[in-house]
Image (cartoon, rainbow, N blue to C red):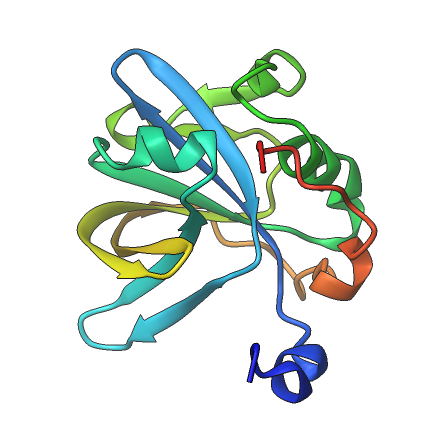
Length: 162
């Protein structure tokens, strides 16, 4: 079996932009593999492709910021998914500010958190970064906007080198 397409084709998870700062450099990428993985203590894991510029910076970082994407965030998803930090400064294209431990927070993101990296887990062509939340977006009034999901972005061409 080359994979498990019956299951994965049915899965339509939310999409994220993960940002990092390390060694005086910044990076960020579009992520589709991520999930809460513990209630008490609260933990979340994001999986970064080993081909990705963001992964290379994250290996030496102490914190990552995870931005949950909503339907109005398509342009942000295109920038962080179709461009690579190997060639483009994505942060020159968006408003952002320095968050906890220097981790970049994208301005205008409705839902985000910064997590301290507790562990890294090998997982094939991705590495999982286990995060302990240390900062988060302020609470919103009213229901959150609809999420941007994998099916909404299937047409994007990954920016990282193959």
